Length: 473
Image 1 (cartoon, rainbow, N blue to C red):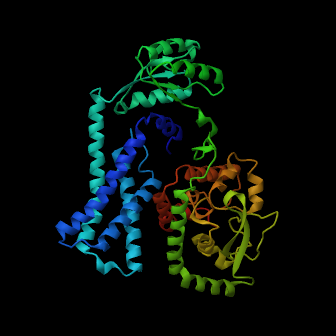
Image 2: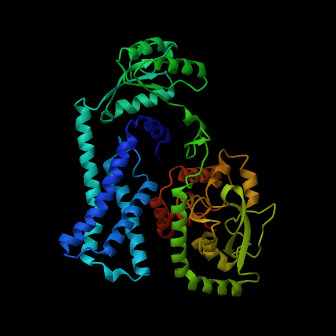
Image 3: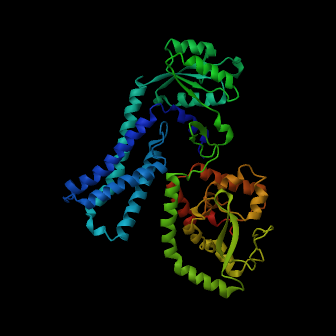
């Protein structure tokens, strides 16, 4: 599992990140469009027409949107090129899949050259990766030679300051050189000398900044030191140093924190959903497209299952139960009935191994998750997603919400038919608190790190993985 604290600390290092990110987006757009134009004009000898312009323009827009959600345009300083290349491939694969779906649905495949299209599909991700490799090598050489580098100072011998210092020291390609750590507190609380030297007090920091010996100051004092921070910022205003405040937000276990404003007042969210704005639209599009396709595939098997349920035991074919949905609002989910009872009250006992309530057919349906198939209607209706934290019965929610830290944060997103916890074996009966804590831990990890390509991986693991069958009874 990745360390979210490290990733957040690295985020303050992006002095010119917005300009570089915008440039990379422009280059990516040129590559996607230009590669198709080159494939059609020079390789396949196809005369460029309105159809090619429309297709390539849609591809550019779709790639930029999908890549944005997949985190391709975040800072990749210090990250492995293989990870970035995989993100490119996953984003491009999603775009190609969507374009093929549209082309087949509109019967427009005959209007495009298969040779040119195939060449475009293969060459584009290679060029996108190659350009990033060149950029990485160029920036690395410049910074290792001392070019494009800045002298930085850290104000505050805190855990936040130490993490920031280790990030800078551990990656020389960032182009940052630590002059030292400044603090008025005693030496015993200082950042270790092997990480960064002690350079003096905060008064000394101001003097060094005034003499233009420091380019950037990172203030890592604790939030409770408001007066010290205000005083330091006021004095640094008399220098030419660039000043950043690095708040210790990691202490709040942030859930997709982001800056926003209320009028002209800046605010930062502590707990937020990853599915606001563009992410929400793409998540909904994913649910509608994949949900519709899956329903078309399983429609006939579902009809046969419905008949089998009716013949196997007395009772309704479907079981409807109240659960908590997005933002804790009650929803009703649908399942094929797998028990002799349809419980939905203040006391809903979990299914146990060898549970007498489970019918003969129900045991098979639950083990294979076929009983969950009607929930695709919940997905199309917008109450659920294909991938997300599994919804629990309302009675179980009320038990665990006061016992497990962050439990209700699962409801910052729509519940899912399958999820990261399920494909890792954390499904079924939670007869101990530890099991539920592990399930919630996986759910929150999914929300913290959601990406579009990760949803596809979870869907594949649900169908072909072994762990998802664990504890299914």
